[in-house]
Length: 417
Figure (tube, rainbow, N blue to C red):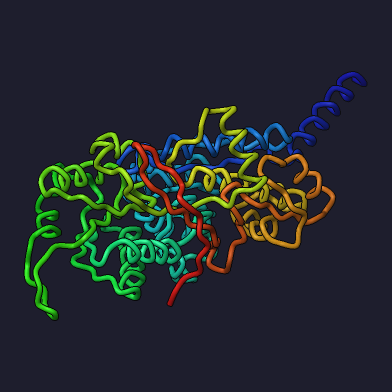
């Protein structure tokens, strides 16, 4: 009997230790884009999330990532999000890279269910102004709003061209970026010739829209004929591969301006490297420094060189922040829920806490166990969330050079009125 009591006591002690160990059974869902117009992004986002989870496990905090495909479309993404919440019982969701996915998922699924979602790549300005009573502070992002990128795009265009036509995906991302670009370009003397929205599904041809962009018509006040100097490509890679190729082959287009959504070396291969030589674009950049250096070394060791796809570092940061916030909540004795994790997000990512760079999770956990504050500085840059769940981040100006995407410079910008 005494032996049985000892055995039972040991079993209970082990169970208590397991249940009280930080990070046990923390489930995070992902809604990355593995098919559809952003299918080039999803696998790299998943790699970044897995890297953060692996590093945290090595530091003593276990995260289970449950991956779903958004399809880069609202309806399948909403169904996937419901399954993650109802069946998989995740406490938070990462993704998508598409604002056209993130907004409807947040409005219809995550926010009504009080489930935290962090997007690493949804840049629509509309996300910042979603009504607070529907958002309920459960929607964050580790990428900057296009209220920043659109300003720099407009400045870049105005320095190169006098008029522009815009092809854009007809979702919150394309609409928001186009609106901000228009304001910035026109403020600097540029003229928008036409804006042409297209559907989220990838079409077989965009010839009719391109015909409108390149047709010679008489403009009003002043009366003159001519076509725009540049075609702005504010879409996703799978759309751009079709209509940029058609613009070159059928309309003799020579000049293009790109954004984060169309930043793709695969695009250059499809339409001809020589046709995009020297063409420029913008994308949310990274701040550099120790945190980015740590990330690049770790990513390369695990997966090879970092692709030129945007928001990979932002995905790593989103995963890391959920883990750090969850650990902070656990260290304070809270049960791990979306709300308790959400409540710690700003506390682990803002001054004046102890500086923590990417990958230094063992140090972070030790400080949190001691009841000390931390300030995680992301691989993508500062991740100090404002009241809207937004961050300020640098914007990269880039150029195609022999089919490769190369950084020209990095600029910091605040939104313009």
